Length: 243
Image (cartoon, rainbow, N blue to C red; front, side, top):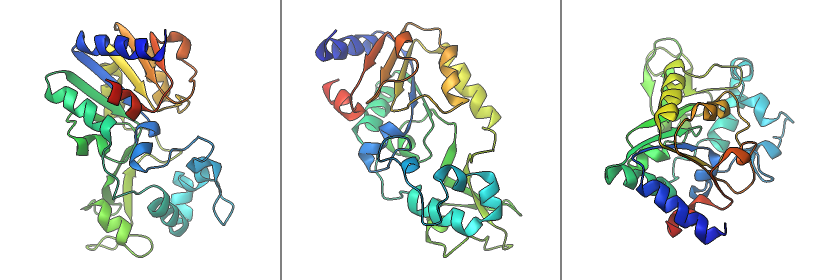
């Protein structure tokens, strides 16, 4: 099947199904100017001046023991408050507006799906837009954390303000996990976008799919390509432009 035939097949799948689950990774946000993690030029290919790897820095242990370094990295490498939804985010939000039941399950923490207009979004790894005081629970927005000089502290009690993102060594939110599995198992069409499917446990959720059409849209191959009904190796923005 050539590329044009694949796009035509995907159009038909979307047209003929109502319950659509879209599972997204960093690749859908790259066109919005947010770097991915595991590509050649991704976040994980670099080390900072103190020779700590990004995996070390964004761990719970590092957050507790070296909060200054953690927040320096987090603010500069993981918070992109000027990023805007791209045409791929908007395409799936528009599908929902046209009456399709579209659930977005994302590994991203950027909030771009909601910004585009999607209303049913499961954030497996949390969001930069939710932050809370570890002492009194007071909530803060992303701007407060980004602009705070040094380790962000609560204006009420002085406690450290922690981003509501899942760090290494921390478990995923149980409610989000259950909802993701439920939505995948109920979907007629599952579209995986921009993820290498190597981050567990999130990557394992794909096995719960029992529907008609399993689609992969990614720039490179993934471990589950052989199980897909359709695999498109391209930037997702190029794909949605053709759709």
